[in-house]
Length: 203
Image (cartoon, rainbow, N blue to C red; front, side, top):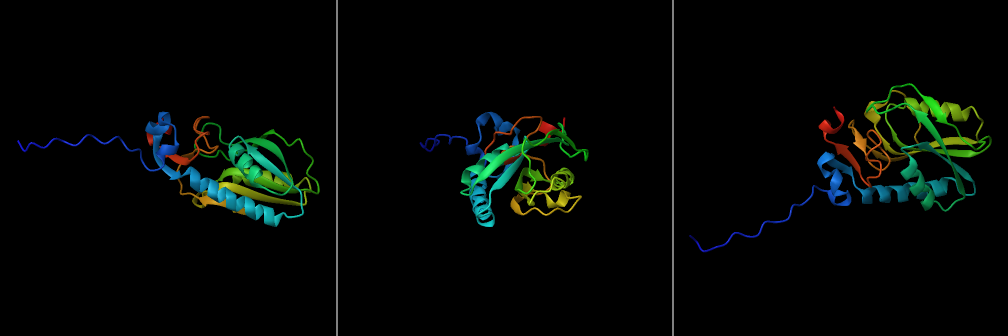
């Protein structure tokens, strides 16, 4: 025997980024794609640009339920220009991990938008089918302008090219949840954007 004692075991260290995620979700998560701090820094930048672009104009933010609620709230809190809010709900995903391509309006705006500057707030744009329908629908109501702010975009999934004026992050073709994005109504409240282990959603 050498007389040396073994060092005490080190406490388990979570994977990078998991320290900002409740422990109950750790076993479901494959990786943290975008951390909470990076998201908030990017939203600071996007809101500052919206302030510049819409200076001396009153903006209507249109959040697309349910995924956009966190992005909508965080952008609205950062703006220094006058801005009001309204919401639409459309169905195209259900509990699936891919868009069905069929869009229905479940909740329409409560606000008349004719002559107004409209900024659609999205959590993610992938195929573009839902957003294309939504933009055409809103433009038919004769607003002064319609632009889009999306936290995430998946360019490799795009089936329709769309003008997205404000983009937070480009992500690869992986299934992501967190910061409003869900799988079967779970994981929306995570502060980071994460990927799930395949066995969580493949069953």
